[in-house]
Length: 153
Image (cartoon, rainbow, N blue to C red):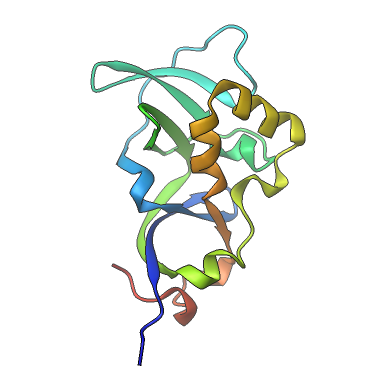
């Protein structure tokens, strides 16, 4: 009997929402670093942080979900093409196997983002848009042991 295929995802909390970020895109998680605002940046970009000696844009995940900004407790650095981007999130809960077939049934992170946000991300960085499009929102009970998500990896 064939086992269902599963992808590893980093589970993050953004306000009251759980997000599953494909682990293939994740570089590292870290405590937030100082962020320098950038004039003219879209509202969802907090600014630039120096990460490993390089300036990296910091995107506020709460703004992508249509929430008000709040202090982030963690940065999740992702690879978008040849660049890195830090996502500011409330917390990182861990890594889970998410069955591949269930990923298509879960809503995408950007479903609640306004069309202007999605368009701005696409104009600024098409590769980041691809990464964020593969990130899914999870039901609240999924972290509490929902068997549909499998065991903690």
